[in-house]
Length: 253
Image (cartoon, rainbow, N blue to C red; front, top):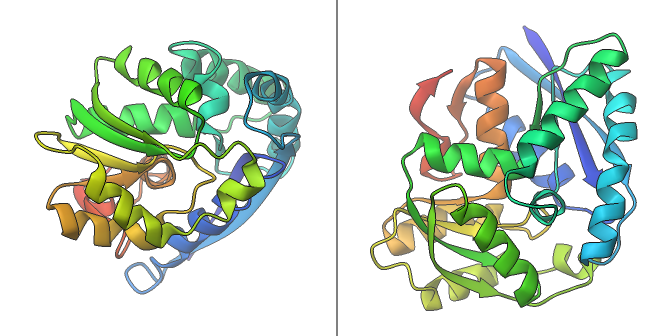
């Protein structure tokens, strides 16, 4: 039996990643009874999804990485997509390198991911070159996310902005409504749909159902984060009822 310690750097108002990440990983027990997971978080202050608060929050990620490294986690994820993407194209690489160096200065080596990088890397791993997305953000922030993704040579055909600025309110959105939103999203000809391009907007209960509804891969920022965590840990990328990405289609890392 092996126990894996999962670390997450989360916004202080985030209530979803500490729900959806454990739900996905713990649902693997029947498939892999030899696995055990524990979950550990450190928080960055943020209440409203504005460029100013996102920048201030990002500066606190170094402290959080050091705190989590004290727990000797096996993998660590910076679990806020838009905080990364708001800082400029490709920033997930610079952020991950900086946090990696910060952790190493604390005398340990822990693989560090970000939800922003996980989404980009997962889309590329599956050759999803054209997508449509749903976000809870105000339209200018959604446009920033679109520009970030397209700078990685991935076309965003369509996007829906739910325009909820309060991060606590984002966490209270009903994932059932995503099934209605995906019906009005233009997904003709796309390779996949990102049902929640935000780690705070709940989507896990709707991922498989949305995929069955439109007949093409559906994922979220949290699904992509779990996929990259499992790859990093060298584990099979399978989670029941979480869509094609976590069906084990690309196997063990």
